[in-house]
Amino acid sequence: MAKQRVGLLFGGCSGEHEVSIASARAIARAFSEAANQSMYDLLPFYIQKDGQWHDGETAQQVLTSGQPLLPNPVAADARLLNRWVFPSTSADVDVWFPILHGPNGEDGTIQGLLKLMQVPYVGSGVLGSAIGMDKLAMKMAFAQANLPQVKYLGINRSQVWSNPCIHPKLCDTIEATLGYPCFVKPANLGSSVGIAKVRTREQLEAALDSAASYDRRLIVEAGVVAREVECSVLGNEQPQASVVGEITYQSDFYDYETKYTEGRADLIIPASLPESVAAKIRAMAIDAFIAIDASGLARVDFFYVESTGDIFINEINTMPGFTATSMYPQLWAASGITFAALVDRLVQLALERHS
Image 1 (cartoon, rainbow, N blue to C red):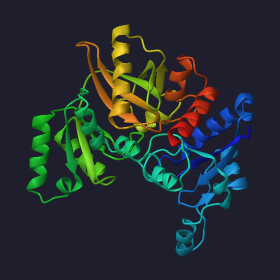
Image 2 (cartoon, rainbow, N blue to C red; image 1 turned 180 degrees about the vertical axis):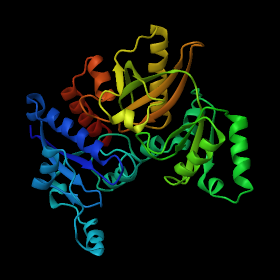
Image 3 (cartoon, rainbow, N blue to C red; image 1 turned 90 degrees about the horizontal axis):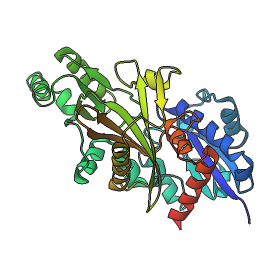
Image 4 (cartoon, one colour; image 1 turned 90 degrees about the vertical axis):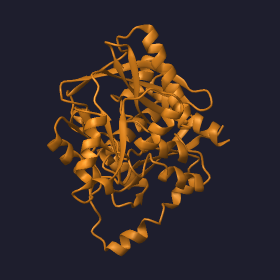
């Protein structure tokens, strides 16, 4: 049987470019293991921060070094033209593995391109990716599926950057509806970028202004004293849920620095939870996966309020971090699926969905 040629697509035009490279390196190592080597040939494709695609030695160099390419000092019009020129070897790919995080990677944009190319690819389609990226659309889908959530308000940038009469009324509404502390977030960024925890009117005004600089759609959520737990989902039509893990940290909240600085956070797998609670979280994770029409993989994050027993869904991530130390593969390792077996299963799920 001929080997499947897997196009490992990484890098991308988002603030999570370096995270994507780290995920791609771990996935490449998994494909180099004997069981996968006999079934797959890996073809790396690197998208530079300016949007240019690279294959062959250049892509392999980034994969090997773990360092992104420096901006190409060519004219702006030449860079624009090059964005539409894909490497000729892209036609050799049988199935794509897009490990792109954040905007332009897990928001339906690259998924739409791959769909136009009429080739199978790992992960959710255009709809699931787009809903999973936009926190407001996501919360609407969760509400429709009767999944419990903390109180929140959706806000447009125009309300924040408005005249001096409207902005104070907006802050009044947030204070009256949600109170303090609360979280201000851009709707369409991952990895805690642009998120702030606020406790005062002054902090709220600054956080709204900051979040509006990242996105025209914002969300403000009520703070809750809870344990942060996560569950991984794998599958297409009949998704399965992993064991539940927990994140602990000393910082005020799970911000970007805490998330990506070694030693700032601890992953507890499996989480020390009553089995009834863990079972409910796993069931809710699958319900969330189905609610946004996800496929392949997703990580679903929850708040568990131990004092009351309440479980609130926080968000779903349709292309979670995929390094050897990331929560998604670690949860599956604790559930009996090794990293190498996991990437094989994801490729097979992509082929299954395409057929």
